[in-house]
Image (tube, helix red, strand yellow):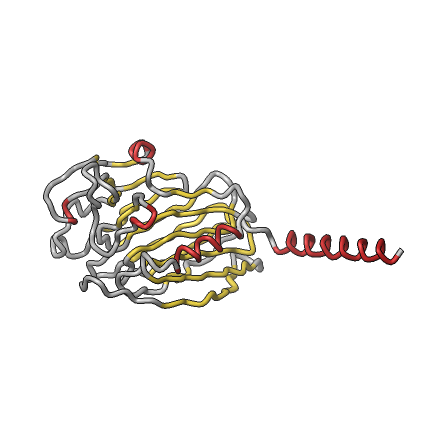
Length: 273
């Protein structure tokens, strides 16, 4: 991989009408915006997404190592088995139970050892080590926010079972250095229906920082997001600042608009009087 190349692009938002079980349908709006770690493009996309949510949204930033340790399966803490970026990490586990659901190593890298990775059956928490150095592979440094991130460790497949204990209809997250990965999403709705798996993640150019967001016209009770590296690929990504929350339903927005219009009409009548 090169050292300084930054690929910039914008994937425009698109909407999909998904048949959910019976005759019910949910409209899913998806967008991915990416640039570099320093140009502020992805960060602006996150700010816009967060501003659209109710204030009770939940964000997992992977900075609370004690909480991650409590929810880790088969974990290794603070191990250092070498001096290269691929042999140092803050935490490694086959799965992490977080505030926004569980991330699990479903299938390790398909070509063990070919990328000089170690502990290939585990996901990694990367970030700022105790000596001040940043762990993790070049290109996935999400240190623009000074925190940690979850690294795929070049896994063939990772599953994110999204569950927050309360319904939601919006989610967003950063991807760092995503290249070969696509992602399939399955949503479960409050009325008992669900979608088929939908390919929502475009393959992104190398060494990028992307912000991905999705909203649904129906309340989501849980979801599964599967990142699939693809057989024969040994490439990975970092994921950070994962947010799950709610945007106002269209009916709520319509009522709000009518209310504002009504207030305007009342004020005009008062002035006329």
